[in-house]
Length: 132
Image (cartoon, rainbow, N blue to C red):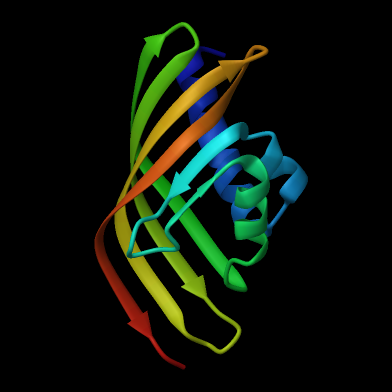
């Protein structure tokens, strides 16, 4: 598998792990220093794998992350950047829903032969929130 395809695979695995709250799988998709920043339209920033794991554990009851239309660029043999269109749906226990769109701006690192996300910044374009 080439590097760009491997990056697409790790991004897909990351989304599935976050949505299913599969913490062990999630740990295989990000670096120990992972920075996740969803900005003021989301849950802000966390740095480090343990803070990120706790963040995912406290996500709304239902989340569906779709990362689409990848633009991946290798910047060295062990680093890369990516921009992905994103559609996010979330529903909390009280029935409030969020349906949002934007772009992920990612960086990746190849560690011990495997690609992992090293940072994710979310640029929001549109979000709709509805109460139950």
